[in-house]
Length: 407
Image 1 (tube, rainbow, N blue to C red):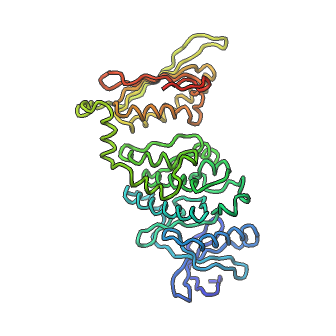
Image 2 (image 1 turned 60 degrees about the vertical axis):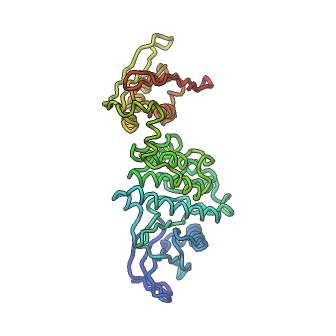
Image 3 (image 1 turned 180 degrees about the horizontal axis):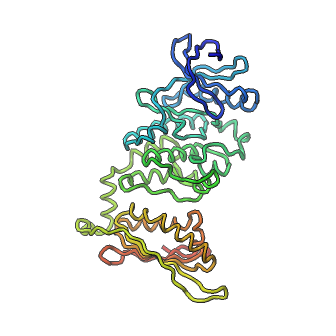
């Protein structure tokens, strides 16, 4: 090949990223295969990019952890800035997610990455771009955290990176989207996004563009997992907390929380037994359904006022979640049409008592989702009823402007 670097025999090109090309090469001194990352020639002429590239090299070279890619050599030759690192042959996490991952594999990767981020945090580094593309596997299946190209030193870069929004929007923490100062908890938020994607095959938040993605991360509630995965919900709720202070303090704490999770059967039994265990064996299956209706409330000086009535039936919490897209769309349309004349919402839900607590919290969070903020300014009356018609709970989510929320 035309490209030559002292001490290496470059054999083939492996890929290209936003700033650099990656080649497979043999390091002559050890006769071992390595991956060489070379800054794009056009960017090499820009001092800022060359400096950032070399900072990545110095960052990774200073870290020694089994789940952070090791850097062997750093240098510059005839205008080419390069680093050589371990050649990894086991593929990417992105490909594994696409093919489907088991819960045990997802947990194993989470442990390894949490350990790596704990080590990086202890050495005052924040990765800032934790995502499936930046996680590769060795042939033995162990995971490696790659690409510290935009890593930040908490000791040296606080002023330099102030106000700069860096990362991949799909996995960025709320504080990253706001271009605020970061802590290691920002990487743990991104790790939570990756863990959710390993479990479900989909990212936790979606948006048509970076702006919509930012809104989702800033305002959407933590998504709820399918029933079979519900035992992971407490851990995800902590990792994806909007406030960094509510997240685990470090990667080791993530591992501790994972170890402390109840097994699926125990979690489901505990949830079901929280209300009248004697009825569980004879619970009648409920056919999920949703009915929506607008009701006139009378006249004001602005014209007619309206209430929106929601009737739903859910056999389990996953079925309740399935109603959300239709319900959200209907409420958005209602507010778009009626505006300030939307005065109240009522919800009557027929469901099994053991999911009532989660339904209650979900309805609270519903008022904070993008586009439905108007619901926080009007009363939302909720009536939860068991399958046999017996009342479970009635409560009113009072308008926030009234300064209280009655539970």
